[in-house]
Length: 118
Image 1 (tube, rainbow, N blue to C red):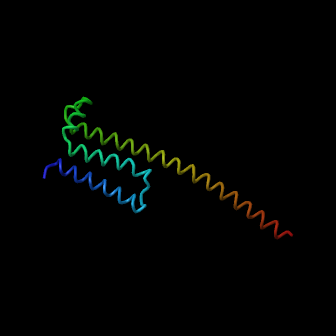
Image 2: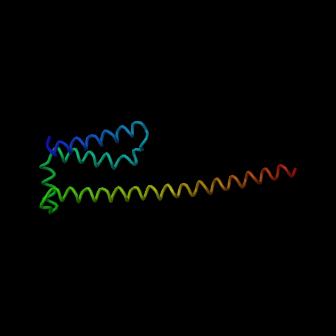
């Protein structure tokens, strides 16, 4: 088995795993989209290796392996940036929810206090 087929099989396994996680609702499509794109790209580039060599030569890399490492590094930076954005959005939602719960608890205490006074 060549490294080309090993890369194709591993990329295909990741693709199937992500699809299965989305299907079982353990991963939302919002988060899975990047992984689906990256694994699909891995499958295509590992099957059509001439495409990979052409892209790496076009980008100015002498070795395709250097291009692969650079692309993986860029992909991880992009995924990290996306996860940071999603985390910040979640933090904002949590803050708003905590404030809303605090206001509801205050209103509930006021209603209970007013009811006891009558």
